[in-house]
Image (tube, rainbow, N blue to C red):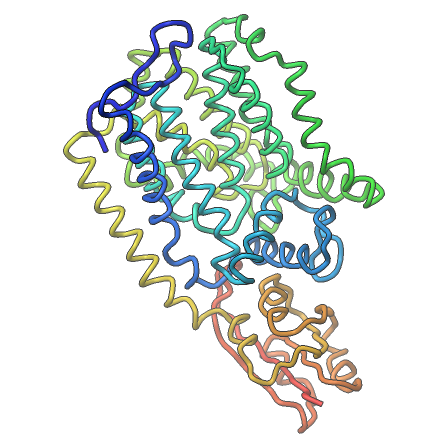
Length: 492
């Protein structure tokens, strides 16, 4: 993949836009890009069907997407039969479509992220080819898809890879507009991508705009503002995003604004959600460099070449280098300011980091490092993922032969979205939350039903001899602990 350049740069007018060379290599470029796409798919698909949905976000999103199909309502997301207004809908739409094609399973829930990863890999190639040439671009694309961050989050059913897809495309389009490209497609690509990013994860869509503004300030280039045509472009973005934001605001009578912007966006700025981040002013200051410190681990095995990339950029400091540095800094600094911190929040910066590091990657060692990372990735997917199945307590409970479709469900003193996702694969009713003191009353009501609760509390319940009881042990991945659950079942 590091053969002589397949792309060249047009020397007239649109100078930064990669174009196909004439001659015998022309037909090979689409085939090589197809091979790159399939390579990215091959790195991310394995294990997606074997590893249960254990992450809280994965199970929330999968259940919301399933209920979209059940209700036929693709505007107002629902979870457990009630409006769930914490996220924007792009992933839910993609998962809902995937469920219709592949069925309601872990593979289908993760398939949109895998496709987004493969498409982002192609965008990384095209963007880096425009910056540094195609031989460097091959390394950047492979570097991106084989780093730890992407190896993990490029295969899970969460929002961030879709966000990364659109922010990377917008960042590439912004560069082409700065270069003076006369192709209108780049202008459309930039603002449509912003709308896609907004539908994927809301206000975080501003990342490419921040990149453009910081870069324009560093190079003192007023021409870029004329190229971007911000006024009409932002209007286009708002129009496209508004096709969903306005209807959901109207249908929820403004509740979406409170739940999404109030509880999610502003709350994350001021508070650490679910314990992910700083809980005091002192710890907040201590966690400000969190993402910069974490970068070494998440960008492995290429982290060792970040110092060389930094020295190269510092020595040359070309517009290309400044543009990448602007995007990386905007992403890392923005998420560093949030009190809520999770490792995957800075994922949109990783395509840019791969492009920045690629010119400093060694020739001979590159193949060896890539081969080693491929082996590790596939081994984890085919060996470690299936080993996790027996430890998924929700999956164990859902496998009980006593469950019936028309049963009523209750949960006492235990609340995880994974339980709703897996049990609703067997039972059609909604999950009811009750107190331990209400278990006997719930189970004594007429009709088949079951109740799930922690095993240490279940031993204190005066159960009826007619009730069946299941007790399972496993891992609570969300809280990093072992857990034991019991389920009382009444079949009649």
